[in-house]
Length: 434
Ligand code: HEM
Image 1 (cartoon, rainbow, N blue to C red):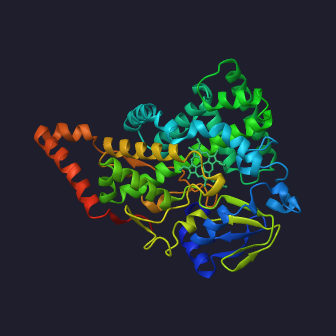
Image 2: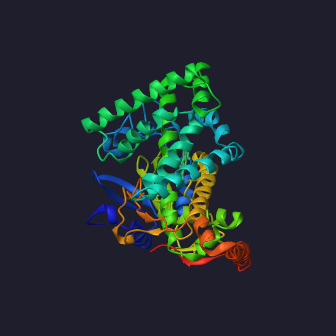
Image 3: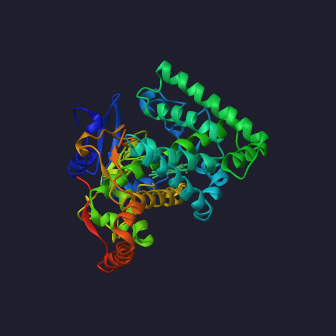
């Protein structure tokens, strides 16, 4: 891939790589040699294989991981373990502390708060002089909801979000400015955790703080896990909502899918597959020789699973660039195996609610720029758009006022009918992505 990375279409590059070989060695920026997996079958196999570890300390020569720069520290770590750099009993110990507050049942409890927050932000979007779906809607929504679940005081959420995004986007984690930001970020986290100790609540940070008091995790682990939760929560969810909205703006059929709860949930699954918010940010370290798709990945190697490529493998997803609400094969956007995303129920709920509320309020929402003019943050780790300028058009309430009650009644009648027809025909098929 060459040229301006912010305008790359990674799906084309991934397709070419998969057609060459679904498992192959590549050179990444920084001259890091890695084994890239682009086929759906070897990706699923790799994600479930315990010999492909998260903890690079278990490599024969750990310094070779990430070019020797990020050991024993890594971007997400405050010198401690967190979920994504631990395996086995350590990973299980950390995961069991937070999992109950992210379960499906726990996520459902946030539905009213999510609906309220969507409404408030849509008011702001309607009032904005130059509405931007990312900064006026998707990101503040993800920050407020993730912040509330973690128990981060509202006054600290903005600053935390700013520092988090700077860190995620840092090109060189070892650059002095980035190291300075990291110190700032973990200083802020330490203050937030101190505040939580004095004022406990029914939230994830309180749970982590109590677990630390019981000796179940260290202070460094607490800070690392908390930051991993916050950054892991806001960044992909923002991408899913903004990129999902773009796909829906392209297609009247997808807009209609949002009118029915069941088809809206299926649409979210297809948007997860098509947008793959973490395109290729899943790393593993080979503790042994591992054979994937007849290719031997040698012990000590770094493995990169391209979830976005696996999600568009035509062997599992016929016409992979097309949104189909009746697909059988499951996507791997949330990973697989013991590290499967614990935030998946929340992310699904939040994205479905956000998109339903957005298009419910602004049925004629459209891009206020050419789609080719949109720019992405990155390609492999965070592929979200920088800005998505939109024109909101009339609200649903405006349309009712303009057309009078008879037309409104007709609209109510035709809505469910169209949705039911879509369900009967086995789902909607539409070209959703280039
Ligand atoms: C669309 C939204 C999201 C996507 C696409 C996503 C994707 C993923 C993926 C692919 C992994 C597995 C990484 C691996 O195996 O190496 C993961 C793990 C994780 N995610 Fe998410 N995630 C999303 C939202 C969230 C949210 C909302 C939270 C929490 C509030 C969250 C918290 C986590 C945590 C803590 C892990 C580490 C789990 C472990 O290692 O056991 N994620 N996520």
